[in-house]
View (cartoon, rainbow, N blue to C red):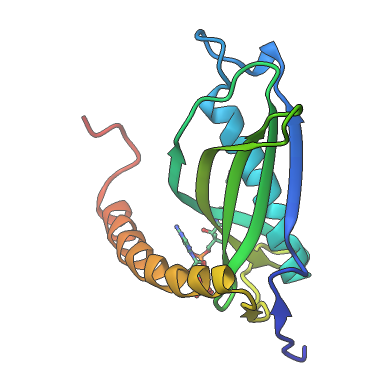
Length: 172
Ligand SMILES: CC(C)(COP(=O)(O)OP(=O)(O)OC[C@H]1O[C@@H](n2cnc3c(N)ncnc32)[C@H](O)[C@@H]1OP(=O)(O)O)[C@@H](O)C(=O)NCCC(=O)NCCS
């Protein structure tokens, strides 16, 4: 297939959620695992739009910071952008904010970097097109994504080696 450079704007995704009591922890705040699910879902949409492949799978989620709690009744807005595409993988940055419906002011609650891999019907990784960063922020994120990929690759390699020597058991 012919390679085409794609802008970040072409694949950006947004998701809005009103937080209900069923999603809360014992303090009445949004449960962290549920926020991770929202992050993964909106990030996958951006990756899917960029890749235009059969499917994308989540390979890893890192640098997930919960910087402030989300309360029941809050309006949570999540935005996802493909920071950079490599061969078959894409780093997607997701930022989550709470919007005050009266003032429209935003409060930053979480940021995450998620790596998705484009795959075919057999689950085999397939190539994706490169990203063209256009704005200053997109250019900064594009450069930072390469640095993160390098440190992630080192960690992924170390974990692969450990999996080879460790048996499928609890190692306490
Ligand atoms: C992600 C997956 C397709 C990678 O397969 P693999 O055999 O390791 O493939 P490769 O070694 O050829 O790597 C393919 C790409 O994935 C990237 N990758 C693999 N493991 C990664 C990890 N832990 N974190 C980030 N990127 C990773 C590689 O860097 C490579 O990127 P590139 O093509 O842009 O250079 C495979 O591990 C998988 O299917 N995992 C399960 C995914 C899933 O089910 N997710 C939902 C969770 S329930």
